[in-house]
Image: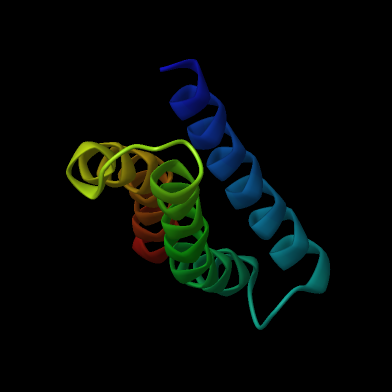
Length: 92
């Protein structure tokens, strides 16, 4: 459980870095830059969460059936935060 929390926290940190880089690079508007960052983050995080699942299956000895729910939580929490950011900046 502690590892899962650390991975989710890592995902939130990665999202924060994406948002900071987007603000730094800029775009037509700050909202557009943040929306783009959120959109870019989601596939990157999907790959990272998949790698985490692969490590759990291949190195830690868990089965795919055991790792799949963990993968969903690990991916979903930061992805939902990114979608909330996207929704908030696109609203106005």
